[in-house]
Length: 539
Image (cartoon, rainbow, N blue to C red):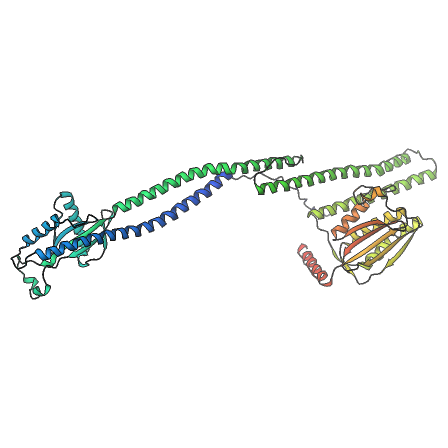
């Protein structure tokens, strides 16, 4: 004994809740974005302001140095004119005269600080002569001039230079004094110069400006900008809560509606939703709820009707079977009639179950949960098959079939069994209502894109009260069986890209037209190749 393989049956899993450890409210998302934007804006604006302010500081200090240098020009000219070089000028006399000129000059500007110093290149020593009126200013001037001498700022005259001092940026210019013509001293040997001989070119005026005040002002602006950013962040937080509250409220409302739909309550969502996108989502969810309610109602109706249709033949089978068991039917003729009824009801029950399974398969295919296997089919073969299939029933009912098949070498793409079942159900319906014969035609539509199967009878036609619900499930006419046949025919036709239409003929009788698209050669070859590749992958 061999074990038969058991196919695992997939079961839909209940959706689990997201187990994310961190759930951030949407308001915090907005707030985080606003913080990032504010910080980036402050950073960019601060860099831009600093670049502008640095250029402004340099230009402002340079203008102040220009003003100070212009004011020193009159001092140096006066000094040159009034200094009597014919007299014996000792270094001390020249220094005293320079200091007196600076102290008594009313033309010196206050735009910059002026320092007078002497520098001896032989000893590489300097001495600050001015300012000497304050210990603080004298020490500060000594420190700045020491930095200037260290960087050899005295070598570049009348040009704005800069140096770092105590974390501050100092802009300065150096002006050299030429008290005598250099040619008069060109023959002197500097290395053997007498200690009392004066080198008149060793006196310098250093005009400098401390930019600390400007940079302090720039730092205050940066601090104010940061404070403004912090205030903006606080305001942004308040606005985030105010702006996201309607969104949060609408989202919670939609969530409650979704939970209600999940429990089977399909009442539409009421009330106003602020957000346009969420309002559209609410409309879509209302449509979804309507479709679910409609599907739920159809499903319940289907089960109720199916159970009723199944119960009727089962009760007949059970009644006649019990009659045979307990000897209710005494004559052989009655027993044969009972057996015939059981056989007929069993056939009816079997046909109903097959139709229910087929229509369920079409529903699953429409929802994407099932794929109907299709292939190239010749239309003429379908016509011959369906005629052979139903001929016995017509002979049994003593009725005829009139065939008019005007098609050959034409192919459609579909499932042969389903298409034959579709035609068979319509034949069965026409056979039930026809008087003498059923006419079967097959031809191409006027544009040649569809195959039309036309089945008509010579009966009373379709009643007006039945026409509106003709293709609905379990909708039956006066002599109908279970109301599944025509609904299944329509479902099969739609699965194959076609449709079914019904109308009454002018001369009387009902006419059904089943339209199925024709497969063109290129399309047919592509579909056949795709199906072949899919079959190989599934093996």
